[in-house]
Amino acid sequence: MRVLLVEDDPTLRAQLRAGLHEAGYAVDEADNGRDGHHLGASEAFDAVILDLGLPVLDGISVLKRWREAGLTLPVLILTARDSWHEKVAGIDAGADDYLAKPFHMEELLARVRALIRRAQGLASPLLQCSALTLDTRSSRVTLKGQPVTLTSHEFRLLAYLMHRPGSVVSRTELTEHLYAQDFDRDSNTIEVFVGRLRRKLPPDTIETVRGMGYRLVTPP
Ligand code: CA
Image (cartoon, rainbow, N blue to C red; front, side, top):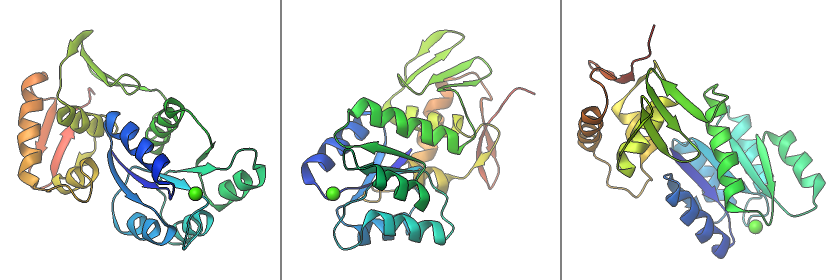
């Protein structure tokens, strides 16, 4: 999963970046509203963390422009403490959730997880596909109750597919959603990780759809 972080405070941005990386997200970031708006409008993200008080272009304007352009990606806004009018303005501008500063990283991560799964119509933090279970809270995967050991890349790939069971996901989409912009993107890398992941899962869990991509096979 790939997250866009738009925050001008360098200390907070560094903390958020570290927490998101640790939780397995690819992160792109901007320190002003104009760059943040551009990134959100031109790149593929699974969620956005958007500060409202930003230089050049404020967060509410960024959000309004995205929504006016038809962008539906989930947005969590960061508001000043006790500023109820900011929350109202943000939600009215199209925010999906808000968090008042200061906040705990765990709460931010929980809200981001919820936004990402709700965007896929998933209500539970436990994702299931046949005997395979992925807990988005602990980043643990089990097969018939037994833990499956995955590298961070394998986990990110499986998590993306498990958020979209039964859907064909192209290699390009995977590359865009698993890596940040500055990552050396090579679609062969995806093939390698799919190969490694397949060896750890029951046969035929990940189907190759010729010329289109991959699909996590769900039981009928
Ligand atoms: Ca700010």
